[in-house]
Amino acid sequence: MSSSIPLIDLRDVKKQYINDGVATTVLHGVSFAIQEGEFVALMGPSGSGKSTLMHILGFLDRLTEGAYFFRGQDVSRLDDNALTAMRRDQVGFVFQAFHLLPKSSVIDNIMLPMMYVGVPRSERRKKAEQALDSVGLSHRTDHLSNQLSGGERQRVAIARALVNNPSLLFADEPTGNLDSKSGSDVLQLLQNLHTSGHTIIMVTHESEAAEHAERIIRIRDGLLVSDARDHARRQGSIYNK
Image (tube, rainbow, N blue to C red; front, top):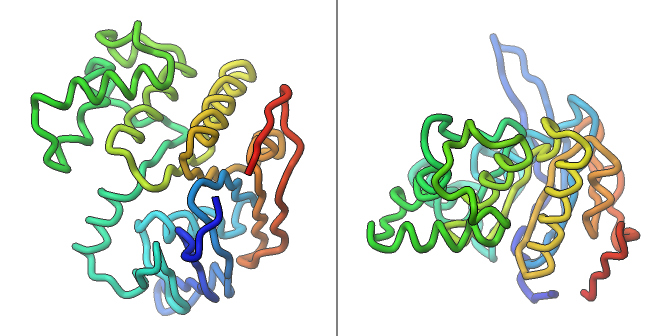
């Protein structure tokens, strides 16, 4: 898994917002690196800065000071168009609220991101079906998304995030709207995706969810307070990294 060039390399990243002339610093200098193939949980209480950090990592927001290298490229000062292209081509997002189109079929929801990257129409369904199969929902292809359970909707959201083969998958509180059984199934799916080579950053405030990752980075008051690796696996899952 190790590489001479990390997938993500943050160097003393700071973020400040200014509202009505008042400056509020959210990140006070965060540094860490993530290699391709890692499964990292980003933890912190409300107001810790973890969501802001995820937005920067996912090219949704800009840092104020410091540097952010993605595969060795300094993306800290990219213009808006370049950031949009990086977000479109390199990142997949899974959110707590799913964000599926409720009256569209499962397969149409999954095909949607391919329209924005120029995948030929003739290839979209095949790729979407492959993504759906990877999350174990081939039998739901033509159902409307609002006909699915919460756990199934989150699996569809994961398939949609994966369909363009991103370099990095973000899971933002992926079990927050699920019951314990469905949440456990989704976390096991993320573990399986990690085992197959996907790089995953999961933002969560739940320790039980974070324990499914191989590495836990904790943020508090805009600072990195711990970075722990090699956590015990649940249900006998074994990682050889």
